[in-house]
Image (cartoon, rainbow, N blue to C red; front, side, top):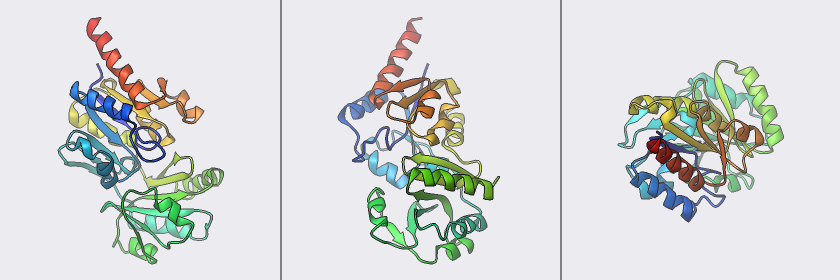
Length: 270
């Protein structure tokens, strides 16, 4: 039987206006009332997850920043990952002249930084649910370990992001993980950090078997979770490669939850 439901946020539980549809909201309430454990697994920081999920305070576990942080529903920090200071500063140096991208630094204190605010950065900043701080000396602050970086995000044209992904993966082989997490976003993570690894830690903490977990997502950073369990659900609007690696394709989180509840009931009757 499925005991834990894991959902991505953007493009999955959240729509483009960063809202949860009423039907999805009702489905989440139903799942919790029926005794399911709930986990939100997002590229967003925990401070942002709390804003979105404020109605469900203390009723969900959270995997933030693609697995850089893992928290239980009682607030305990189960995992926490950051770059080595030299690595994060070198990544910034290596991409210093790449003006075609907007670059955000996500830090361990649940804060966002960027080097310069411009008319180009403002639309991207509007997508962040917490304040973003401008700091021109980011490379130095990271190198001197004044700021602890847990994720770097590059936003721009998808084709160019794939090229950047390949270049960074080659230059920093064995030191980073890279994920296309949205149609215009590349996330660069510390090595051995992913939603799947974070979820594995949570599963172990809860004493569950992987097949007692169902995962719902829409992006490439969700595939590491899909690989853990056969109960994987991809949004119908996601990339074909994501849909092909999911057990079931659905139109909404509510559809996935309905399917999960039906699965459990048929399991009980067999």
